Each structure stands twice: as structure tokens, then as C-alpha cells.
Length: 264
Image (tube, rainbow, N blue to C red; front, top):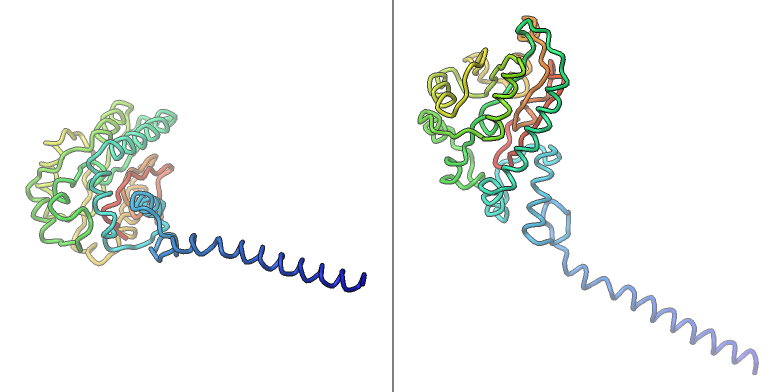
């Protein structure tokens, strides 16, 4: 009798344990119903705003690598970001960090203490162009963008203009290093001047011999030439990782936000 009771007790415990385990397992299907492949989280389906914020984070940290266009579900997010207070605040934060570092640099006074700036999405904003071209959702159209550059109407990024002028006052030599080509020199100079920039030491644009080079190689080579001329590159501001990576890099590099496009 005792053995029979014990046997029945074991059966009850086994059934209870099995039911309890199944009840735990059954809590997962509702959660897994939230799962869907989205390229960022692997399988988690998350709200658009949260997804796009995470996507932008991977872009800015270069975790996303080379990508061709803004995800369709994030076009509205990118538009709101680039035209709203968040982009302005992020740009101001980068300018503040840059200036804080610049104030710690002991300048030699020989005119060779350089700060390098990229131009597009660094000094000048092409948001007016991308407003009519999908905020990064369209494949890049070089002819269309070149026509926009020739108009010389890109506005200054306020935070960058402030940084530019304060670096001038501190005594840095300003050098502009852009992926634009030599044929765009006149339009670029006019645009910069109209936007409030002046007194740069040098404006370096791609020559014909640079056309087949990646941005990283091209800009690295130009920085090396500057170093060979005796310049000390204390700071480098750009919206692309290719503005800052490679060789002959600055002592400090500062990346501005850009979730619209990537240049290798």
C-alpha cells in the first residue's frame, strides 16, 4: 500500500512538473509572434521609431558598413531627424567637443597647426537637395547632385560655422579636404563664401588622377602630403568615416552625423 501511494505521488508530481514546464514554454509563442527579420535586430520586430534609431546608431558607429540607401521604413524618420532639433543638437554637441579639445592644443604659431574640414554634410548642408530626392531612399544620382553643387546654394551647418570661426580665432590653419572635383572649385568657393566661410588656407579637391581612388585612400594621401609639408593635423571634422580613417590621421577626429548616405 505504501509503495502504491508513493507510485501515485510520483505520477502526480511528474504530471504537475510536465504541465508547469509546458506552461513556461507556452509563454514564448506570444513573444515569438513579435519576431520578424528586420536586418538590425536579426528577428525582433520593433516599432519603426525604435528600429530606425537603432539603424542610425549602427550607421554612425560604422557597424552597418557599406549600405546603399535608407531603409524604406526609416525615410520619414531620417527626414524628421535631419530637419528637426535632434540633428542640430547632435551637430552642436560635436562642435562643442571639438572646441573643447582645440582649446587644449598648444599652437606653435608657425602657421602649420592645421584643422581639416570636409565640406558636404560637414560645413555645408545638402538637406535642400535631399528634400527633393528622398532623403537617402533613392540610389545616388551623380549628375543630379553635380547640378545642385553648381547652383552653390547649400546653406551652412550653423554648429560647424560657429566651430570654424572659433578655430580661426584660436589660431588654427583651416584646410578644406573634399571629395568634390576640381571642375567644381569655382562653385564650391562661391557656396562657401555665401554661407559665411572664409580665410581657409587651402581647398583640396579631387584631381583627375584621384577619380578611381576610394575616399579613404584619396584623403589619406592628401593628409600625408600636408604632413610632408610640415603641417601638424591636430583636428579633422567630417561626416564620413572615410574622412578620418586610413593613414596620416589627425590627432583627434570628430564625426558629424549623417544618416543619408555613406562614402567608402
